Length: 109
Image (cartoon, rainbow, N blue to C red):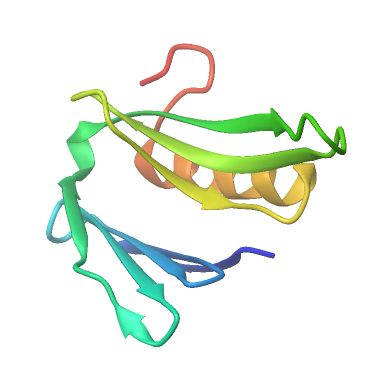
């Protein structure tokens, strides 16, 4: 389950070994990742680069199991993914990020 911490100028999302911080005071989004015991180099983007936030669904061809993730799509063509436990978890996370960034779900921005 994604852990969501809200503050007026900051939104922190933690899912597994990934922590995503959206900070209005600096205007940056920072993704911290760990691989086993080692922290990987943090990724940073401007908040204005985030074009769309949506639930991404994929299906495992062997087991037919559905996996849902929260996707942050960048204007530059890249994307960041946060895994979710289920559909409700992904939808809650997407709604929190959209609300924080002021993104309208119908128009994208």
